[in-house]
Length: 228
Image (cartoon, rainbow, N blue to C red; front, side, top):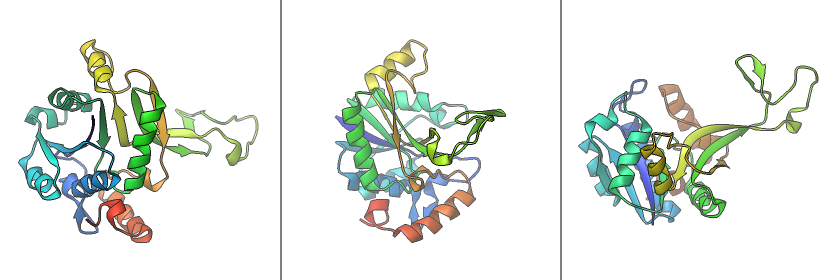
């Protein structure tokens, strides 16, 4: 069984009530579940929140609602905690996290990601954007050398994790957490490259404004959760 879960914490520090923020008039969380439905590859779709404000949205969109404990929505709670609690409450073969704050991942990309997960043989699959440009970390080159100039197209891309889409095998995740290990990256890990718009994450108002401008160019519709 494959379950899609969209986390939707009510509180957020940088953009208030971020998951309820409208993008072209449609809330981010509503867009996420509509895209999951349009992808047509999941056995069940859930909104996962500590707030009952999201329950009517789930009902209106014909998906399920999971009420997590308030403690799992605090600023100190980790994603591993609420993901594990969801897995324990809803046993499945694969859990897909489809983030509402990555609204420019189209439904076709969600379906393609699901197919990749199926064939990858990986226990954890992380979405990323490949940055094929010179990158440094703490002042040191990562994918280029200071002793020679390499054309950008010849560089090895850096894989920037976006968290737009994530997939886990719950049995592997929960076993790692039980052992006190990092469950987020448990087992065999694979990476799935998204296009650049799909890697845009909404953290602040500027991100939302940029997504709105891009969506106008891309053409809003069911692929992006703008229509039913």
